Image (cartoon, rainbow, N blue to C red; front, side, top):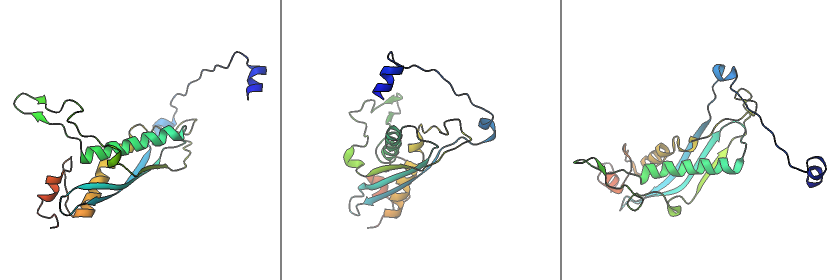
Length: 179
């Protein structure tokens, strides 16, 4: 490759181009899809929930950069985990001020909370999406991740919690929590 560039393009290469939505945009769905699978362990004495493993499987057309797409999806999965288990905005109802308005008191997942998280992209070439046969993945990883965590907690403990974050007190104070 270096010889080619030296011989035919010693000053480097530059290219401009664009892709505009075509008629396919109106006629066909352009969505990416995914599913999340979660296994948790819930301590019977304390109600502490620990993620054992988490998997996201996605179909998003041609993946143009596998490394960044995987990182984006794993980030979304961990974001969903944090939403389900840790993140909560506390508001002073008298004055309407946020009580935890910095990261010192705001809980987000750390590596110990998300040990085994994996994302897989299914091979797909969507010839109706665009000439690259790709789709956007944006926040695809978070879609369904929190719900998958909540369902895994229900499967492990028998307690259906319907408000985030799913904290110890919501589990152990529920009359259906196993004792």
